[in-house]
Length: 352
Image: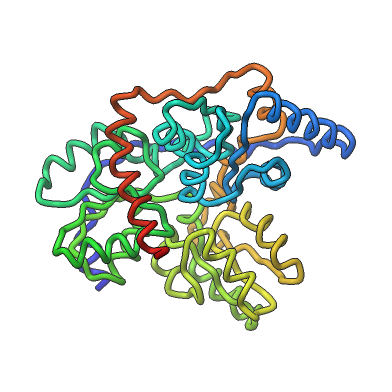
């Protein structure tokens, strides 16, 4: 199976992605942080704005979103929330493709982000022109792209998926006999292909956070913590996924911590997720899957450097000034909305 999957990996020369160093910031004094959060809360109310934060952002931003009637979620639920909330301004704490998706689905609303430089290695490793040319070479394939892509790449696709809904959508397409061109995360694509057997060409992209997890080091950590369950996001390499007790989206991994009886969990995804896990299961012990081991570069160290660009201070500036607005041309938004809406409509059928 592994050899067959390897042969389906597209031979594409990807651009070099420059991964920023993790920002080092001093912790704000307690009173100063509390005052800043109160000022942000007041501005959200005054400007008819709502804060939507991803599970991988700083815990202070996640807490603030929940305290103000906003949303802390994975990218699928973030997309849903923005379409259903009446606020005229959406402030998206996450990475750029999340802000673009919010704008695509809410073109009449203003969408702001704390830092427009917060991008994603999957997005950066899948330039629209290169991907579009590759799709043109395989016209008989249905193009399915992960949400971690630009508006232009989404507009070139037939379906957009998140990690939480990728498997049921691919099963649906496989049942119709469709061949899949998948992008950009090769590891998620390989995981889904292994479970469905569908014919699939994989774009060779990867996430710098999940790519860094090391299988041998994980094996050693499991021996040191024999009572721990291993939770793995499917963006991780196959030799990490194969060690998992649970493989799933961020929401699925959080639910596993809440419901499983294990006293400890080894978690192979961005450690920002620990904020929500600790809220729901305060007595559980959470361990990050190791990025140490032979060949490790620790470019991420289980934290996305782009997610770390989102801060309370930047959020306050954005609300005060209105800078960092996400713009997506209406014609492009209309084309990108089609595959996203297709996903959202499919998701509704799963709830029936």
